[in-house]
Image 1: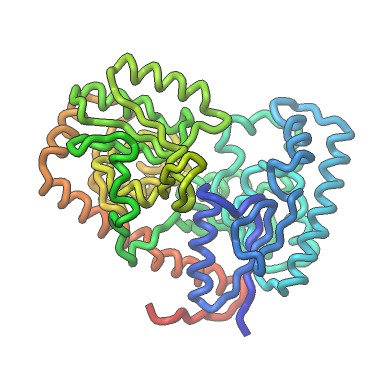
Image 2 (image 1 turned 180 degrees about the horizontal axis):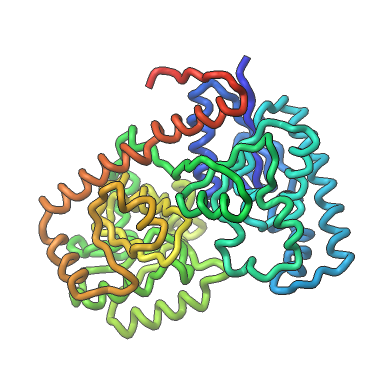
Length: 425
């Protein structure tokens, strides 16, 4: 009889990293013979395998009330503590219902025991695991100590208790070497490094009848050079470097296209970028209203494309982030065989660069040599082809589903004590 995996998080919906990587884990685990189920506050997973509890969402009003009172302060009011535990007790009861309803064998908290966006949920999961001793794989994407906004806290005791907990029935998985080292240093916990992956075993889709007019639809001419920034507009993405690069190229054919929206932490930053683009005489296109999770026609009768419709049209992908937990957009660029500009953020230097990728690199600023290299590369189609084909092969070797399958087999075997034979690949 197939074992049942229960994924748990605040949200399994949209294109955030946790939702995307969870779906990849589920795909591989399903191929391995498991059945997968989902517990969350918001979900776009099939309803017959989902258990949706609105209070588990980090944007639930009660959790927002709590969150507003526990950060940037060392003092916690008694009422805040009471409401945290009241909510935790309720969520713990729903976890029991989830496990009983679907007869779950292994729990997989996805970042819910890592970043304290929902402290009551972390406490609930920890108590549930302590009481049941259920075999668990805790997948960690972003630890609280990696985010400045969580550095001053009135819930240090809860962070020590649940983010993440130290329990013998938990196997910990992290996405980069630095996280693995810090988890061992801060918590004394061992972990397996499971990198973010992409299905390189399956060739990337190209331009089809729906997406062939994308450039025209966003106002690009046939000879324009599309510089794709496939990220949200937030300061740590370093988009000002992309603007500086294009400004120094001094070629009006280069057009910067940003695929995602600003979000709560990026509105002032977006205004700054627009001012900078004007000063540099660079055309900046923010097309978040034309990119969605699925193809559709919007209320104004305009086409909405997916990000995978956009990538094939890109001539250059820029990824000048100052910090990333891993960098899914980087893998996507390799997958779609596009040349990439990288700001050598720490995790890239430690985990990814040693694999031997060929990229256009920068170290915190756009040097003249970088500009010259971009200009030369964009004029040399054979050099671009050799670069992207090499990167695809390297990425497939280290960041494909085969790597994920190997890691998940080891994790599940360590919990169950039984070898799992995957289907022929």
